[in-house]
Length: 245
Image (cartoon, rainbow, N blue to C red; front, side, top):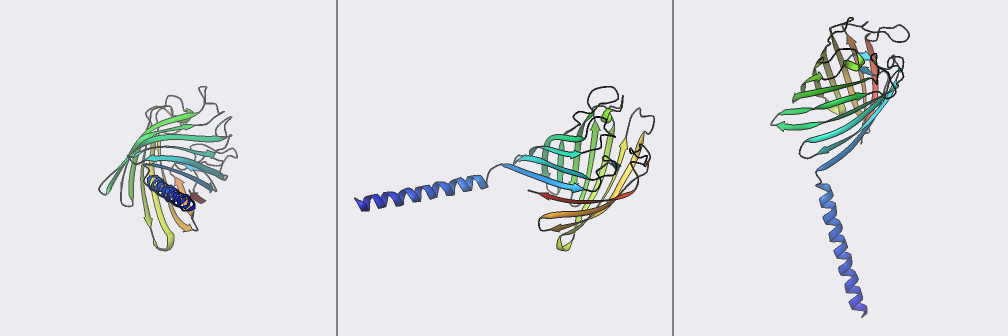
């Protein structure tokens, strides 16, 4: 009887181990991927212009990606309520599809910016929705974003667009360099119809964190002012530290 019980226990243990191994294999080959990110920047710049009155911001988000290429995500940052009346948080929601054609990557989707508690010039909450399409090849990237709503509350500014070209080159020992130039075209804005922003930066991987520093500038520094009367698009250096999980 003892031998029978012992044999049953061993077989049960082996069966459990086999089931666990199968579950682990299934989990490792799951088509679903979840990730998160968190970061701190000395100044939150969006297309060259400060969103935090030249002050620091804490940022972070969550992403889901399916093996087929479809993805969903959310990203958040504090912003200055002086620039977004009544609101001090930016919440971005996006979804799209990615696919690799040999060395060329395709990325298409929709992105919605939302500022809870804020008040737009024409009433309602400040928000913005864009459709985007991007291509990548090695270290190069090119992206087009088309606004299907008023540009962050600017009246009658639908069909605005933004073109973004980027370069990200990894170097030895965790170092990397990156460069960017973008062109924003607006509609029916009496202050500006379009402007160029650009940046040049360096990154360093350190113990799972990415440290960064970049120079950011625009050719229309005084499009709008901070609460202290400074040009929101003035040339500046932005420092960052971030981590993905």
